[in-house]
Length: 483
Ligand code: 5AD
Ligand code: SF4
Figure 1 (cartoon, helix red, strand yellow):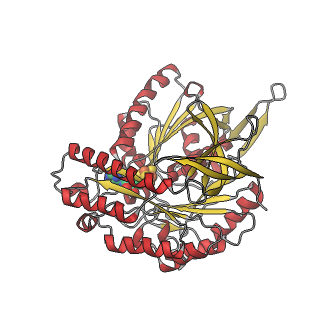
Figure 2: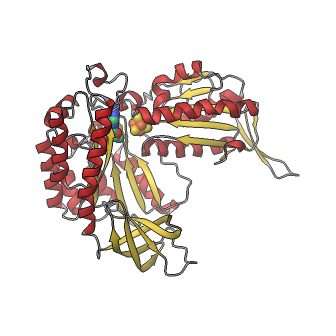
Figure 3: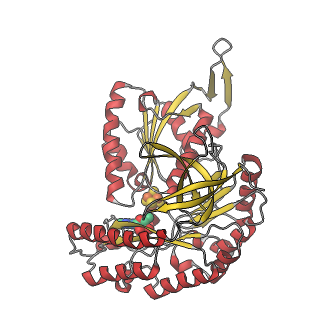
């Protein structure tokens, strides 16, 4: 554990594991404090980075004798990992935090903490405002979660830690304990782009990349010792990866491609500005890189892109898609769109519909613009109403579904290899499901009901497809490892 100016550093304290000889129960003694077996309940909002952080937090808490529970009634510690990107996730969090007051009334010993993006910028206010909140912590101190929890159990609560990590290098080893063959690997944190609508630079700080050698070593260990076969390289802007160390995402993928036993490499999330020719070439040449790219465009109007401070034009973006499709003809593309950005005109909105026609995305995530404090856009005078935003969002989503439906019809009859990651209930029928290399989910029936296909590689043929889902039939089961 590292310290972060908490005043309490559990790594300076002796840690002792005590097992009761009669009950067999384990407790962990840190300094003067005894940690009996306790349960932590955790609610995560937001992006994959946040989910990844939550997994890391739970993994640390094991050292203080906490196990994870899905049942709030059993919890001794309640943690929220928050997202600040739009009002919607913000509001959900506030109402749930309010609710927890009742749980704390019932169980006085309940400890409540809030982490993540909202806590980074508003932690102090939250701790002040919510009497039942014990502590808040920002995005850059999650590796010191045990220090904070220790501090609360030592009798010192109502504090906020939201300092930034100031060490020379950003270095972390991936911590997973789910035992599945899929892992997220953090390669870069923060963002230097300052798009005018976006809160991320304020909640996640400046860009910092891990060294390529460290990431490659990390992934090799995950493959060798934890049976990982698919990695998703994570960061707010992975295309910026390695700049400060004269390294690049293209080089990293090329190196990861050499790891025996690693089958699939994905990365998210991208900014079009930093998509280099070198990276496009890697999309054509890499054996293991997913044939999918999520490349957020945000708008199809050059004047909106300018107000958003995106640093590219619609023509440049479409040029990138062209190059990517030339380098890798099978590549599947998806994007993010914000409709109703500050003072968006009808004409500007229609330029985005036009872009959807031209780009032929396989899927999109679309959002109505939501003003975020601190951002440059929050200082612009905005005349657009939320009604117009809502209408445009619905219109755009319907428009894209029409495009998607046509694209997906072309999938019928095609065969895909997928790693089975779970089941789905389709109208009362249990089906298995997995993601294709190009990131489409396919649902299919097993050969017989007892068959457990979880984490097997299988070949499936698509038998029907709608704009949003693909149904397949099972062709071959290849087992848990390829080769
Ligand atoms: N309002 C609406 N959507 C936003 N996004 C980011 N900031 C905002 C905002 N203020 C969307 C962008 C981004 C995705 C993760 O969230 O489309 O790519
Ligand atoms: Fe939300 Fe952005 Fe924070 Fe992710 S990084 S949790 S999307 S505000």
